Image (cartoon, rainbow, N blue to C red; front, side, top):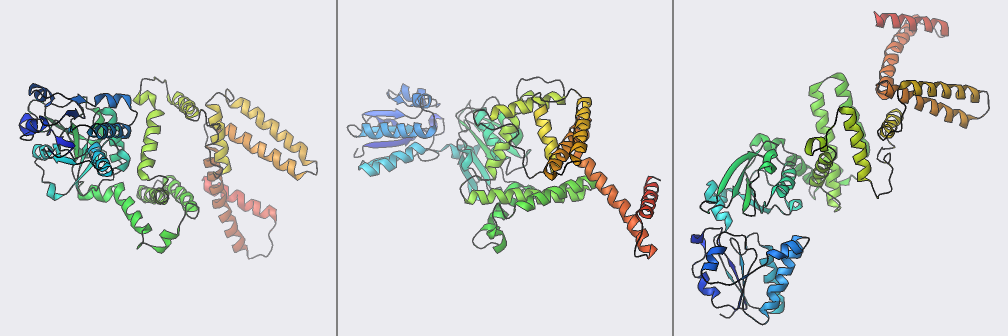
Length: 485
């Protein structure tokens, strides 16, 4: 036949779709390999007297798909050195077939002649099953490589090789960074194969709940609606990529993680202020500004080859599933307190071998009262805590006495240390009483600010250059009565 290697497709699964003359072509080769024997036409192929060897065992023996494809390539090229070899794959031999591409590349390197015998692709069958016109725009991607999936939400997306629920789960997490959780998707098994074809529409969040997924399953994601496209994270990611691009905004292009770090803090406090004011319109806007900062950092990281927004979403999704075994697993909990205790234990398990303390993840940049509360809370969740506020109250009194003692000494460093201990103890009392120390102090500062404004007003009205402390104290008490009334 002239060629040393024949790469041929078996079609999507129906015997009628097997390329005409394939059996005749196989009769001219010395050895026949099939990538997988898990294909509906394999029994028919055997009935035609074709003897073949399957590479299915490679999938069990190798740890990654890349290793499987490399081993298939090595075998085919090695055997083609002394025999005429046929390599058969499901569908079209060049559609979603990485090993075929690797065999072609290796054959060119070593000077082996290769012939490709095309066949009907599973895509043809899928387009027919869903009545799709691919000229309207379709992106095809491999579900086994979720990190490389970057959907264009204005076009349809076909995801191949959705072999099982685990693959579907990883795919779902990736897609939910670009589409609404309830975006409809079509799941298609064995398109074009009589008696095996199955089609079901499900919301994206339920993609991994189907129990009939197998090696012949693909997923079609329809284009997002105009509103969904405008509201998708992908649009924001795209806007940021343009702003940081060659023809983007000079200011955005000049920024680094360090230069925009303070904006992340500012936007966080603006979110908290909107919550305090119970202003839902502002809260929506401020959450958007905060999300922008996250996307900004992710874009910078992507440009330096560290990670992208998809990695951010996938990491937090994996973390939430792992830390909620009472929801996604079989662990049982009694109440919210036990949930928090389990949460900290799971975080400790995540850090096993890292040499890091469970307190290492608390940012030093947090306001001190808030950081103290977080430190005490984390220590408490692994058992290092007072039984109730009484023990913390006794500690507060002890620290107050120690502060009084050092005030009589000429030692500013000791005063600072003991005052810090007193404040830390006060936070502990607040925590055990169920009071947020940071919020309590913020409310007190707000209260002082309001009352002092009235004192200032009295001062201005007095038109005096000097007012006694006693007089200002009277104004302060009047402000307290006015506010309380």
